[in-house]
Image (cartoon, rainbow over all chains, first blue to last red; front, side, top):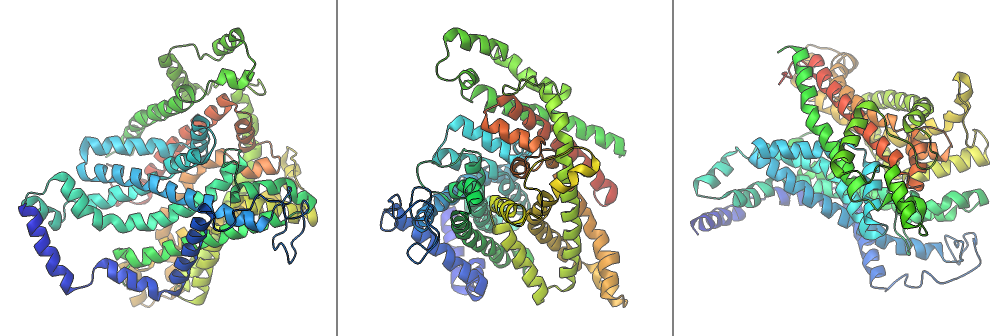
Length: 299
Length: 313
């Protein structure tokens, strides 16, 4: 009880006085034009993905709208594919897979990375040794091999893609969180929390986590775009999503189409992917500039 | 402490890592993966056939012995035979290593050197338009899917313009060159973005150090500072970054090799994935993991040799 009361008192006072790191970060983000545009682009993609899931738009992507491999024209901006389906609608429908792969993968990686990194950094000693050993093991194996192995085990489909990409991308985040938690755990505010009787989980979740959370946000946006790009490679290896359009399978189809002069499916999927990946990359940079206290005052 | 003692300690420390990696590979490929016998024989195999294949592949041994086989293969490089081609895997690897390296080494060297030069120049003009433009260009280059580079490059420059060979390979020194020019160029485009961004960050970290201020205060020109002071200090993280990438060069450029029909390790791996050829995939995984572990020791040791501030702990 007393811990909670003490915290409440402290937090009430600080709120009314000065702006937090988050307020500052938000201000510098919205004043940065590139970051603002990136956020708008990401939101548009997210809305498109939600609209396709609910079937509001691009629900009839699988319908034949013309002849096979019709070149781009006024009626079909990106032409048609082998079955005479509109490439534009397929690209829009593909947003769904891309955004969900990015989102779920990033969540999986963040949960594993933060949990292991936080525990390793906080407890140190044997626990730390074990977790460092565990992630060294993962980082010794090339990602592409792990991806292949995991999709072999889990079979094909969206869930396998989520898990494979999530399980191969958490190591970097885990390292960063561990290092940051080590820097924080001896700080005065953690000692103060100990002094008023805060337990391990309280100190970790309530005190240290908010102070290392900026790393999670920055990495989340980078993990998101890595996953979207990796989906293409999985599709090329025949381990990707099946039964519905994804940018990966569209780009993969192009390996047979280009020799016949059919470039529009590659162009449409690459363009759609390029825009959102670029937005995430630029947003990641802007987030780092805004949130990383070490970069304050530079440049 | 003595450097050799440090190396020895590092070597001892890698034993649990190596055993762990082998265990992970064992779990992934021997325990959890679907029954290889049914992959090879297809749906219509009889029970007797499946038993024979399982015996032949050593899958009827107890798990402990199967695990020991993997550990042994990390030291002896005896990976058995490929299911697909029936060739000895270590022989396949030895044959594949050279074509792979004729592609990855030039590509790696060119992109690293260019990236260092570009990042030095942009850190000289930091904050100016050239710097900002280069950073955005790098991010843009990184945002294009790698498969799109390869597909477009091969189709446009080799197929439409016929500037380069579309695919294929000939071994022997001058003969392979026409076949690797385009793949090397694509490799450079694929890797230069992240490299420049990373090197630029390192250079900028150095530029804000006190010794740079001192150098400026005593009146040195900005170019002298960059080349004599900043570059020298920035080389430490750059070298570590470069060395730790080397083991992955062994794996070759997976996609490039398979698209340009270069008979390297990457191409072998990709075709093994297509054919579900587990022993080859497993062997490539073990090999790259061992190489990674060895190179990370080399990096650690070099780091302490180059930078006396890092203690040998």
